[in-house]
Image 1 (cartoon, rainbow, N blue to C red):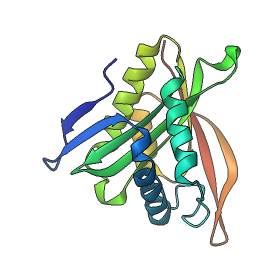
Image 2 (cartoon, rainbow, N blue to C red; image 1 turned 90 degrees about the vertical axis):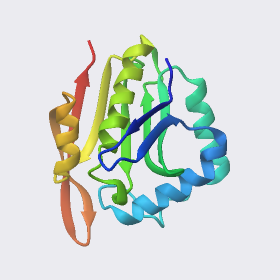
Image 3 (tube, one colour; image 1 turned 135 degrees about the vertical axis):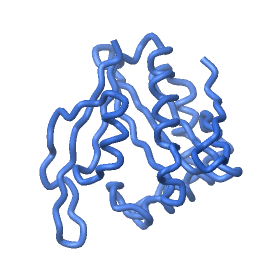
Length: 181
């Protein structure tokens, strides 16, 4: 399946989504640190994110070589606007299912970037002949993300109470999932 797509966003700019390659590692790390500083919906702060370029290259290469993993980046005007990382189970009995994380830079919220990233993830998953179940965890008060996932058919399946602690306040997380067959 072709893993590069370009589409026009609500503001007229072009979003190009493609699989990450080793040469993207440093830019991805800068992106993740930035997003971790912008959003409290991520389970770590920018200071806690310590992955090295060499480690990120290994992650990207592992995803490229594994038939139930994918690492996507979304680019707008040459800048990383979004990252989606899906990892399927490692053992035979669970390799049909996996979990993903999706981030979109705050300056690109509301343009349809998340929708396009999700569309490509689901298209890829269906094309693998392997992935039959997609799971995710989302902060329970992240209404925009929850609405995005529900739009694709994800259902709430459980609550992880007090999963985040930010500035002395606890936040729950939701488990969500979708069957692809």
